[in-house]
Image (cartoon, rainbow, N blue to C red; front, side, top):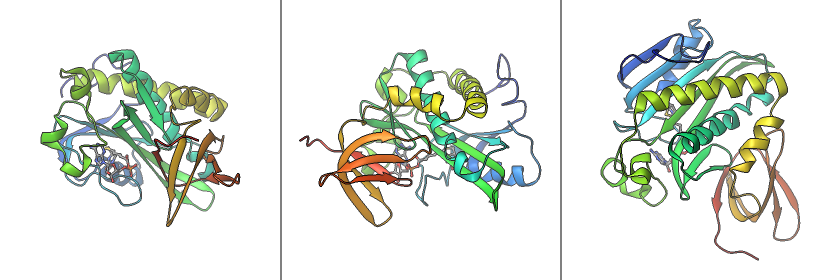
Length: 261
Ligand code: BT5
């Protein structure tokens, strides 16, 4: 990765880029930099992570060949509104992967981007909050790009993970992908700040193949089966349970069920 800023059309995002060959987690480093006063738009980018993070204390396996970066944001939002950034980032990735590579990309609530029903990208948004004030938010994006899933990821991920290389049968240019995602992220972020989550979700839902289908939702210690009806403007997922009850879920994971009724 060199000449990262060359040709970058984003105005603010990526004005400062901290690039490392190896890091624990780009999100962790970005949070440290933000707490020492790094400006909005600062990016931490790494070739690989040895303690990459998913949500809820999970791991993001991050071998060389993937794209791993985090952006520091300082929006004037309430903590509850900050939830929307996951959809901003997911939409940015989905649009760019479709436009650059013609892939049939899907978004899955809340933070996944899939190709052929397998996860190609995950988003981790972490907010530093004091009361009702958001000090900063770090949005981290990991894309499985140039590696063979079976060589680079542990066996338990083979069934549900894919990479761009596996889908396209060739390597992609990481700098090019990075710049395209960062530019789109900045423009969708600005749209989100101007107009709220509704226009972002409207587009995000166009890619959301799981909506209208039967899903299993795991939220904390609970799990429910039902029909995925909608993602609301507060970012929650609405499902209709088998007994007809409507449920809104704010935090959880969705898996698709083959069964349809
Ligand atoms: C995510 O969490 O999907 C968020 C991933 C965010 C990664 C980026 S990389 C840059 C930045 N720095 C970080 O440290 N993180 C961010 P979640 O929805 O909780 O999914 C995690 C689950 O996905 C794991 O429990 C595994 O089952 C699976 N998984 C782990 N690594 C994977 C990979 N490379 N590809 C596909 N699935 C993976």
